[in-house]
Length: 161
Ligand SMILES: [Zn+2]
Image (cartoon, rainbow, N blue to C red):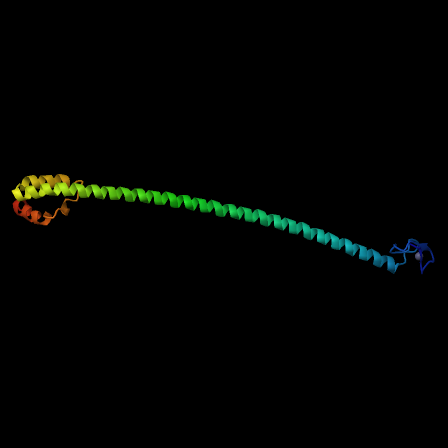
């Protein structure tokens, strides 16, 4: 580029200078060019910062969503495990209760027949002894003649005191 001539002191200098190197008089064209250069540089810096920030943000988001996904998966697994354990336990308890109940019905079916026989034969002392012993483990009051027999027992032994 052609040198320019300072309008103040008449010296010539390169046009990209913002001021005359000899007298310091401002060179508007050089100043404007430098200002535009600086503006461009700033803009590029801003873009760079923006890109960096955006990249960082995306990385954070990715990291964040990865962690969130992990938490969701782990939580789901824990819930599934708990539900599985719970339903297994419940099934076992239920099976156990059902088995116990079935066993009890079988027991009652045969034992209450013996009660009937003792009751019909008037063997009340044997009957009350059997019931006293059985009542520790069984619901002897399920026997169909229970109330009836209790009244008889009351009449026999209830008023002895
Ligand atoms: Zn000058």
